Length: 72
Image (cartoon, rainbow, N blue to C red; front, top):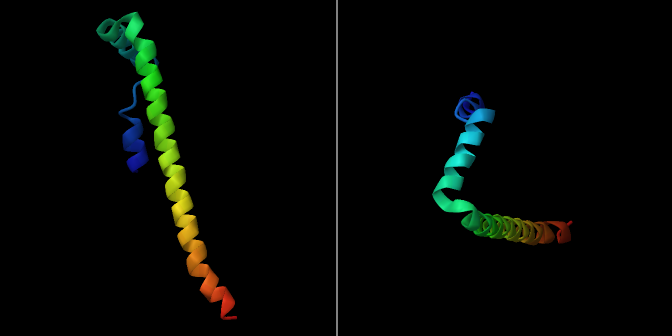
């Protein structure tokens, strides 16, 4: 139910064009590559953080599983 509500607020095709035009007008053609570069670095940093968190969780899980396996 929540997913259906969220989908109702997503922009459709023509709305994306309007959003792109507004961004172009606000920032200009020279600033957009810099913005995209910064956005890409942010996404990469976020993915690295998520992967680090997954590794930490897996290490903790392995540490918890080791004593249980050795007692058998």
